[in-house]
Image (tube, rainbow, N blue to C red):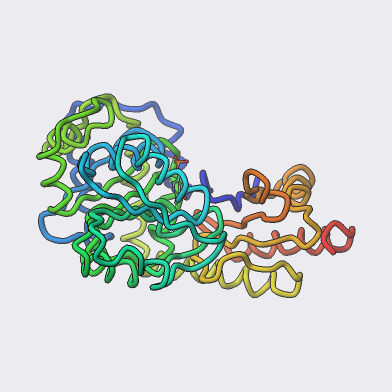
Length: 358
Ligand SMILES: *Cc1c(COP(=O)(O)O)cnc(C)c1O
């Protein structure tokens, strides 16, 4: 299988080897050391400000988003949620579900956010903003400078879901003034699913310890307290955490996070150059390097995804709902080589020769 979805994605052989072994017992100094190194490396890669912490929850990315809504947001927060696709909608729904006053900025699918979209919220007493930096359903990479400036100017807490943007697009927590950044193990980290990674700047940490605890399993207070000694309150996805450790080490060995981002960018740009003559319209006004969402003029996006999978063993990413007839996505994260792009393009050429692509 060649996997061009946006997660789970293909992993490096060094990471896969760990998946073939039994999970070790984890209440040990050896495992604690691994966890402390994971925390240190993640904070460095995210350029988190001094005094930040990072925790690893055994849950999917959405569990990380929900944990942040429950633990970092205050009951009194007035929340802005950027909603330009299914992940923005999820963030907004979580905020409403947990009783926060929530205003949505609804954007057309694939559209960039502008100062005009933010204008009604200037000086209007909002206290937190939730955004999926790369809205993975359309691949739009939001203008984080614009959002960061808005949040600074208005004293608004900036919460960034970078579940697909981490490692594909540039993130500097300190420069953005982001209080929280969330990512997940199965996206560009390219290991098994099961772990949400949450980095918290000092402002977010203060909120976690001031807020009343309203949950047990997703409690950030518990995760942070146990994390001080490199442990977790409950049995974690031990193997996935070992894989994260190896993966972060590999990134360092291969030249660091800038080199990894450059590799993903190269793969994304190579694909975009080669797909251009096929006449699919790109969906995102400003695409993330994690994924390319394309509109199939024949409204046969699902058919393209199915034929690629069933007949060529190449996995693309379908979209959910009504838009799924029109739009499919090609991911650029994970262990994808230039030779893999060649294989993918041969399959696109074959679909064209067969008349499946117009
Ligand atoms: C994948 C993704 C999620 C959800 O992650 P799960 O692990 O499927 O819960 C949330 N936000 C963004 C931006 C994503 O790309």
